[in-house]
Image 1 (tube, rainbow, N blue to C red):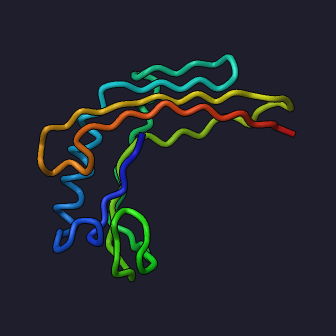
Image 2 (spheres, rainbow, N blue to C red; image 1 turned 90 degrees about the vertical axis):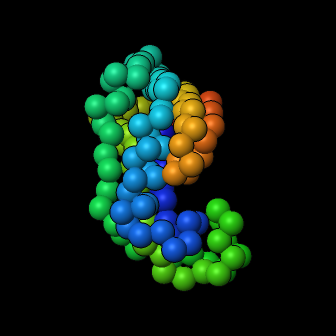
Length: 124
């Protein structure tokens, strides 16, 4: 689970505001689960990979995603868990990822969020 927080999505926010909002959002994660093939990762396994970025630039198009109507360069920060695995042997794999958060703080990017995603991939 990760969040990106930009000053296009939160107009007039300083980089410090963006940092604080992204951190509060990810501090509110209450469940994490990942399964790749037969290998499972729980909350504690995945939480080791949490990373908070420095500010970086993102260019949004006009009428773009996340409610951004006026495109252009935006300052952004990100926070979340980013997993890199060993290369997979040839075969077909199911990747199952679940996470949720509950955040009552008004600085959070998303107060209630749940995802449950399954992918099937073919490694060649």
